[in-house]
Image: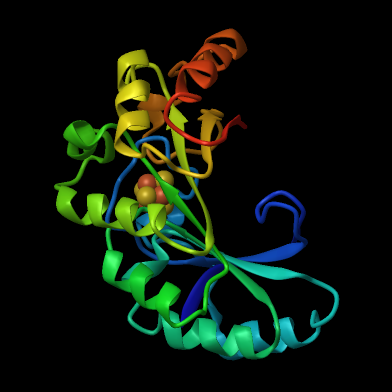
Length: 228
Ligand code: SF4
């Protein structure tokens, strides 16, 4: 695999673990608030091959708990699972971030025991997905990925980035219904930094007060709801 970035250390991207982050190139969505536009439109200048990544990881055996694979959308890459297997052989935990468009890849990763944690974005209620991600979406696949995680033995989380003009209060509750029974769901504040669609730079996220109110409402749907 070829990667568009390697962050050597993080304490916040793999809950409770020390980790490094690998960024894959390319994505099948165009979320206007995406913080990694150069990975999504594949203009990223950094290109790191698998051998370089493995050489780095070998120096971190015993020092880091895990590896976070994010993107872009990692499941678009046919060699993802065979690559993860090599990481697992070094003894690392693996967290995979995904937009849920490839349930068959997630299913294979879970059934073959090569991932320890999956974080899946829930962009909006299923009925608004294409509008939110600016691409046609096979909603059945998103539904399958949600169901897969809900019944999965591994640790997972769902998460939604909240911009008022994209996800309304009633949308948040609709999402709660669509992921009913989930172990963990995070409401993420939109932070306006470098983003895919500059017109979204000044879009407004919800206040702490509003998020806390959503959090309370979501307790009826999910086992744990956090704000980040
Ligand atoms: S936020 Fe995630 S799913 Fe959306 S365009 Fe960016 S990388 Fe793709």
